[in-house]
Amino acid sequence: MPETAARTQADVGRYVSDAWRERYFAACDAVYALGAAALAEEDVETSFATTHVYRYGPASEAARNRTPVVLVHGAGSCSAMWYPNTPALSADRPVYAIDTPGDPGRSVQREPIHDPEHAAQWLDETLAGLGLDRVHLVGTSYGGWLALNQAHRRPGRLASVTLLDPGGLEKVGLRFFVWIFAGFFATFAPKAFRPRLAAWLEQPVLVMPELRTMIRTAVRAYRIRRPAPLPLSEEELSTIRTPLYVVLGKRSLLVHPQRQVERVPRLIPGARAEIISDTGHGPQIDHSEEINRRMLNFMASAD
Image (cartoon, rainbow, N blue to C red; front, side, top):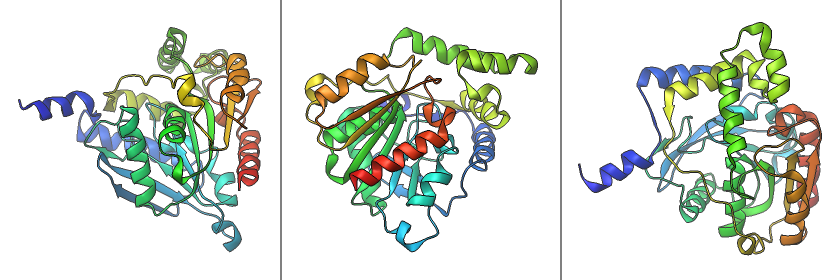
């Protein structure tokens, strides 16, 4: 096998079959239906992938002229996970939700993007292909690493960055992976036990049939082929000048919230960092109304 083909097979995510891909798309569509209706879908060609993007928009002309929001989801998911946020955000300004190449979704990956410079180039090319010169970038989990990396390497198109319990601030520890696997196996628990498990694990996927089906189908349908990204160094973080807002779950297992709420503003001039009670890794799902309000207020202040 040629070296390029071997590298591509090793480093590029893929569906296990066409049938499983279609099953996953059907499960995603049921979750998309819980949020705002997309105005359009668009494929953007980049050096690394055909990137699939969902566009949402406000009714008023004044709102349509505001700086748009770009949403970048977490690992192992797709842009359907933003269903609690698209109604409020898109009522205020245009919204673009990206399916990240290398994760299950409708993007088609051709080259790996786990190298930080390649990740920044891919996202910059995607924004350029959408005709977006200035955006409010929002990322959660792995999408938070992508957004933080963008603020460090390619900040030219960024009006602000919002990070929701993000990667990129510290090395991912074993406790996070244990939580991920525990949550997945809990999806097989009898229905009567799921609410208690959902509360204990802080996994809304267990009590929402649409989310549960989407996550379980993703694990069967798609093979992610990338290493866990490394956190940005303190030197790299200190280069960021884009207005930055970090929201951390008090019971997060991805980061140490109290450590980061003190560290981020110290390293990044003007950065805001807050801890949200009664949530772990998904503040934008567990407290969607509050987080939507805070995000929009921050974007308005950055504008």
